[in-house]
Length: 496
Image (cartoon, rainbow, N blue to C red; front, side):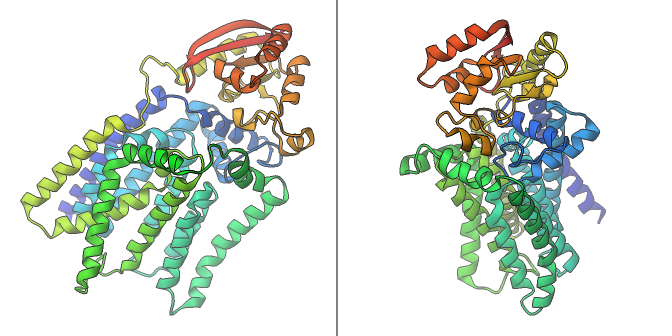
């Protein structure tokens, strides 16, 4: 028994140490991503009594701002606090996933998971930022950790379903994973349907009440569904857009994809042979099907969305890691030592070759990182007074400078709809071009911060007009080079 405990602790150590080193580097030196600012601003706003959808535009399910906002009231407000929260739950997810693999598949399964996760830079980069990926991965992994495929436990199964429901309340694209888990539990409790109903009751009631509350109090359908399907849906879905996503997705995660394909082949061969064995010794194949369907269905949603990014796949990475590790681990348990060493070597070098292709954008000089955000925020505080308002698409500046974001701009560039009708824009808490120009002419914000990209988005085809309005009402006070995700010069203006 002691030998197994040592093996398990070493595997957790092996995966956590490189992941933690890459992760803490990403926290301090990782490129600022465009979403982080408005997620942290949303977390700050909800702690002040505002409601997403009702008081400001929010385009995700509602759990994330409440989770981060609650913890930030304890740990402190700001971007660094948010990233440290993400880092903590990201590392907790790694530890839990390795423990699941060790518990359900043995030492070889945990070894495969340690390689696939510990050397995955894209996983670290995106789960250590303040984004839905970090919290979704944590809740999905916690749900799988609570689940015991070899034993029936109503309490554990209810907890697992509740945690997966919370993951759905964080990110909508997890809904097929939630449905797959419900079907899996139905299959397990088929002779005891009353027990299954009791397991589903609390999670269903929770999800129903949350959705009903926010639907009744705001524009939840617009923020979560209509926004993505109608307003933020160019280019149109095509073979070209799907090819672009799949190409990026494959390059970003090809070691895991190869492991998944190989594992599917092993799983299919065992089904064809029909030798009486199951995916998990003492368990059933239903567990494997739940993992496969969850990963495949969520991937299909990401592939077929008109605008999608490879990083969306990080949200469902626990399913593919767990399935591949258990399948490959079982194969390694029943092969020779030489074959095991060859497979481990192949996985290691595959992960090593994939690291340069993965999204892990850090700058030790601080270019485009939170260091630039802090530098800009200090300059803004020197130029402003308490209670002043700020107009910017760089919403992280409102958080770090402790100024009030001008209403309607909380979601940065995604809240700007130049040609939307005034009454619709007001209802949805977004900004049209008329409102933007009025805010600038009336100097509704004392501080204005723009990069060339922000200016281009605001101006559209009316560059001279916007430049004239800014020139007449604002004066340039500071410039911060290499700022933000696109590493452009941030210009800080104050009202004349």
